[in-house]
Amino acid sequence: MPIRDIALALFVILVWGFNFVAMKWSVAEISPFMLTALRYIGCVLPAIFFIPRPAVSWRLLIIYGTTVGVLQFSFLFSAMEMGMPAGLASLVMQLQVFITTGLAILLLGDRPNKLQIGGALLALAGLAAIGADYIGSAVMIPLIMTLIASTFWSISNIISKRAGKVDMLGFVVWAALIPPIPMLVLAMIFNGPQDFVAVTQLSPLALGSVLFIAYGSTLMGYGGWAILFGRHPASTVAPFSLLVPIVGFAAAYIFLGETFSRAEFIGSAMIFVGLVINVFGPRLLNKRRAVTIS
Image (cartoon, rainbow, N blue to C red; front, side, top):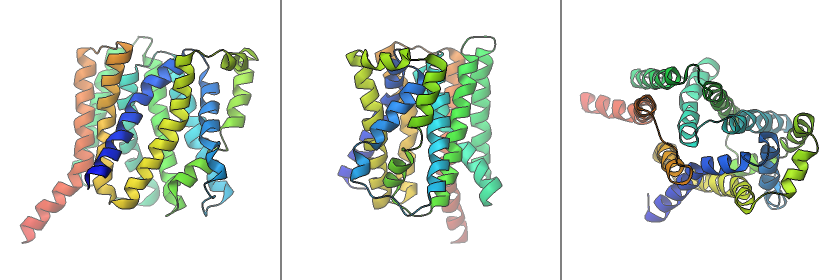
């Protein structure tokens, strides 16, 4: 991978890692439903006038938009509003790797190897260690909600696989038409007109955070990721995503002053090692088999 593409990958990781801090700043002033609506309105405008609709059915776009937008971010932003630490959220969301693998086994007939299964079990043990530390605390429910959000992200991954080889940036932009209306309706139902008034009274920090989430995380992040996947094999690009929780934890520490308990540190380390095994395990296994055969 040339230096320019490594730089692009690191830029995307920085954007996605800092995104969790931006979420915290945003939900401090507007509701999770309104934030989700604004995220996708920003994703649609003005991109939809320049990016052609991908060759997929409206049904698939609606299902994907509902899963990734209405459901995933409703749970994630609500969890952040309720006290989910930004750094921990950036890590728990990466559990979608294992959930996606499980869904692929059930729905697509994929077969994981022993290292992938071991990595998944280690990550689950790490999650259990973190969960045990939060039993009875106010963060337990946000932790569960973040895990649910990760599950909906995994489901959206399976749906995008069903879309086949299409322009994923176009797929994301056109699917972004789906979440705003239901999110605005939910904002009105649960929070009333004051939620809409709050948008006009956002502080510069919150407004910048909303714009960052809409244009930085979604368009620039997914756009850069799509470019990388178009130039290089998935096995070369995907491991960079392991850096997202590291950036997320560092950003949460620097900008939000978040600290971590021993259980969080140990559990997070177990999840991270499990992710590394899951990503690099198949490659190491193939190399070992190749050496054995030769």
